[in-house]
Figure 1: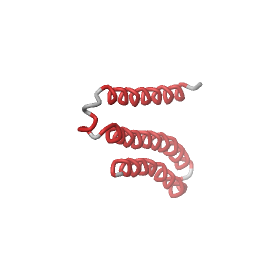
Figure 2: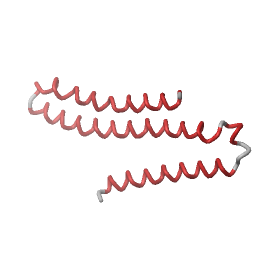
Figure 3: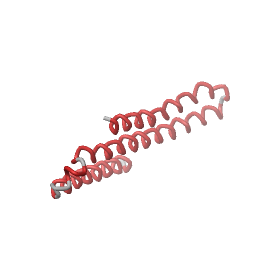
Length: 108
């Protein structure tokens, strides 16, 4: 397994453990749940944060790889800039989709 895959696996395990810890903490104090809005109202903020965070990390990785390839191609042929740069914009759009998903999670 690559070290980058291990990092992703470790981060997913940590996120799962935090979610379980939040659920256990919510169950341990049942009298505070109705006043705070319950488990569903708190977990939606965690879900929104994960949606934005994972989308931005993925978008950043994509922009890094596409940008490096685009700069390499443009160093050999400057006329390729018009063809390469829109792909960087498409990769940045991933972050916007993550933000929209988070916004819908919070508003619903």
